[in-house]
Image (cartoon, rainbow, N blue to C red):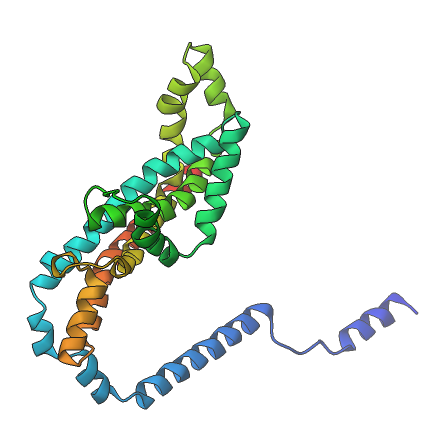
Amino acid sequence: MSDTTATTTARARPKKKGLSRTQRRRLSHSVQYAVFAAAVTAFVTSADWGRLRNQFAQLDIARQMFPDVITLALMNTVLYTLSGFVFGLVLGMIVALMRLSPVGPYRWLAAVYVEIFRGLPALLIFIFVGVAVPLAFPGTVIIGGTYGKVALALGLVSAAYMAETIRAGIQAVPKGQMEAARSLGFSPAKAMVSIILPQAFRVVLPPLTNELVLLFKDSSLVLFLGVTLEERELSKFGRDLASTTANSTPVFVAGLCYLLVTIPLSFVVRRMEARDQEAVK
């Protein structure tokens, strides 16, 4: 077959019909948007908004919650969270250093602690602190009363997670940093405190902030310790008023108060993660 014949045959051959990759992607996105719009429309049109409003959005009931929902319930929730976070951070740092210790028993004890307290539900830890500790140690008084018990329970749970986060942050620091510090005459402990830990905390700050958000929500478990009216947190405060008024508006308002704190914290986490990614680039 001559070159002229081959060229003529190639030109005569019909081109494959079909969508290009860009067209297929646009079509896929259009279908997904259509499905999403249909789902939202079905939800909006099928829900009984009148009953929802009567059950969750009674303004007169919501007004009765203020200012106590802020000055009492929200403040207690913040205090419970911060006390548990501080205790957990200190204990978690100790456990993380034990996990990295060259002494075998320290590593084994830290590993057992992490596995136990990461594996148990936070509810069981609260029950343990509220019931088992007084039975095991009769006459023991936890400093701070309910606030001390909550700090202990939340701290024991969060320390297990923080320990692994801090350990990962320490291991992310180049080993040359420790070697350089030792060559300058730093002791291992001084090098860890002055050189390694500050760099490690820059790495683990976003996940530690995430842990703070989780603790803020877990503080609702304080009700299993038994609290007075002045010690109620948001969840307990909302449930008590919902039972009194036979309406769920207090629960809805309590949920909005949770979001008032968790959404800004989540935004801070995203900003820190974006900053770290820009620093890496």
